[in-house]
Amino acid sequence: MSGSGTPGAHSTTAVLLAAGAGTRLGLGPKALLRFRGRTLVEVLADVLFAGGCREVVAVLGADAAGVRAATDLSRHRVIDNPDWVSGMGSSFRRGVAAAAPEDDVLIALVDQPLLTPAAVARLLASHRPGRVTAAAYRGPDGTLQRGHPLLLDSTLRVEAAETATGDAGARFFLHAHPELIDLVDCSDLSRGEDLDSPDQLHLLD
Image (cartoon, rainbow, N blue to C red):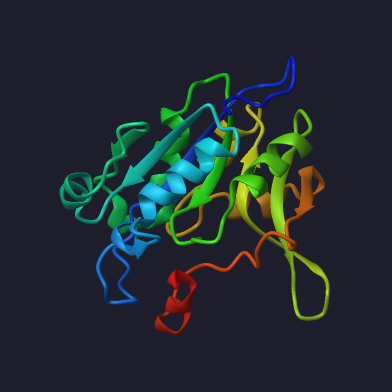
């Protein structure tokens, strides 16, 4: 399954942010963590493609040469971010710039192992022109909380990338334009957890 699947709709490029060193976990780059017999970056790239994205651009940084050598990402585009130490913003900018200019861009994180093709497909199907479509998950109090992936309309991606800096990807753009955001409840598919600390390594079981 590739493309948006909707006649007349924009196709979508997924940008998989996989440049971090995984310092807090202390296990090397998160891209290389083992999950379901493969590496996280391989699994997540295939999930994004299976969910309906036309192309997946994986942005590498920490030990990029080692990640390339240890993975098979031949189905996808792989780019390096030499400025990865400056934070996620630089990877966000490079990934968006690498996507086909006419495409919507789906931003995904390599440390979200429980992302499913169904969640990706739901975002693509829910997207409306000129909008930002974000996966959302219910918190302990039952309210929806915005998470990832995040789908940027082709008309908004350049402006969003211009605001990406430090460890902020689309955060400043989203704070400035809350009226553009549509939340899509994906709570039935996962809890949307990011693998940030050692006590979350159970997500890889």
